Picture 1 (cartoon, rainbow, N blue to C red):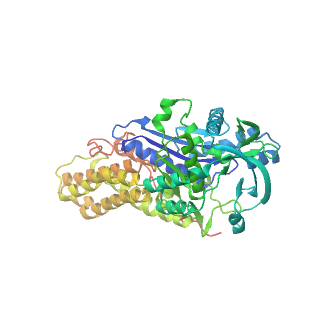
Picture 2 (spheres, helix red, strand yellow; picture 1 turned 45 degrees about the vertical axis):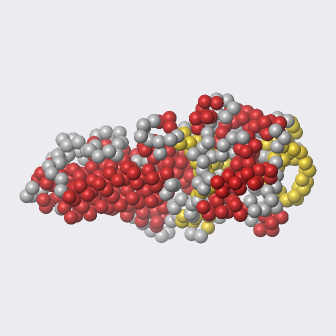
Picture 3 (spheres, rainbow, N blue to C red; picture 1 turned 30 degrees about the vertical axis):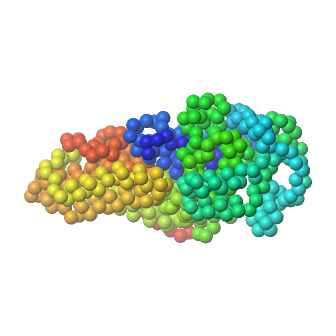
Length: 508
């Protein structure tokens, strides 16, 4: 994991109220970035770049602004802090937050449009077909008949089209030749299935007479850009494409675009063919994760089952929410959110295993060693074995993270924590201390040091709590997973339980 790491989230729709789906993708990007920084052998902060932001153009934004009696830009300026403030509350450390209304983005979009037009990849044609107002795009007859689209109407108008279809075979070859490009495999198969049918060209404009809230086409002042052709470009405008070659060449191609599975086609097909036209390399990976479900249903405003991450954080704390979201979803599959599963996961992993181990170790050091970290007398096979399991995490965790098996990486760390709890039961330092204090000190030092190492590995997931644990054990917030960070003679301070048990909410 020593190479550069450039991760993106989708740019979120400015009209949306942030929900747990938005929070999940953004926390995931943050966790992956933190793991990468921690695993980079040179510990270079400038070896990673994390981009997120907002999609602020399109018909729905214009309509929402009009309904509020506001200018669209003022509407976007008013709504954007909802996301910025939430990311701050969720401990998200992004490197850049891009908005599609910013001049730095709009200028790049117009330059790209001109570039693709000059290449001959954009042409005008009249099109008649079904238009989905909610999706802001033309849909096929098959899509219309599926019943999945609301607000469908027949439209006939002249528009500008991108010659997407001519890149179909090249895209298929790229997918076949780069096994890690579309992940998981089920999504790769989905796109390859989609590409078995002839790929249509993409309508990339909207006449201003119908909708004027967008980026104007540089070669036709009567049209604005289709919102997806605008939005996808953020991934390169955000790293200074056409404005700073050194920065762009440093970060592009992206290491991974993290997206929800519902926007897979726009990324895997639209974006890839746009990059082909620009003669730019494709991202290394597009990873489409699943949906968070409430029962059997996807969370949605229309169903009224959206979980607010702000409410969860206010009630239970940011680190608990981050841990649950990262541990509970198998990347690529759907996950079900319930308060019961949230509290069970918290109590089992954090209160009973991780937090309880800290309470036991610090409590026994307080009782038998006057709160002072004891020295190691002589290791037995039991200490060597538990130390070895902790040191192996230095290889196991980065390996799983690199394969986007985040839930497994977390489970590996928790298995080590559970192993230390078992070690404590077997060694019983509270009994040993009555006859052999030096031996009891060795046991407690070993347990404490493994706990500290596990806290380091979990820090990307729970930055605040793990730093707090590290300070309790060492007095230092600096995190390093190498063995020996626990210093004999350091005096522990008294502390409250980091993860007090939660009670299951009573049914209303």
